[in-house]
Image (cartoon, rainbow, N blue to C red):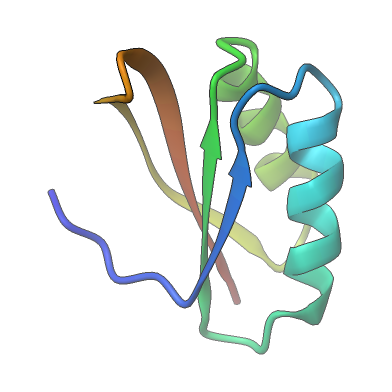
Length: 82
């Protein structure tokens, strides 16, 4: 599945809560209708992003997927600003 995104945050190697902290900063600057893609290696980010998207009124979690990049499992999150 290929999802078009406008901004990407590379949070690989960061532990909770830093992927969410970095994503939140970028999300606040994102115009409505645009999509943020976040790359994270922390497996806890899957639930963190689900919870965050449920709490933020203008955030929609479009998809989450797992990829293999540079020999590591990467959790990819797509969040659109409503």
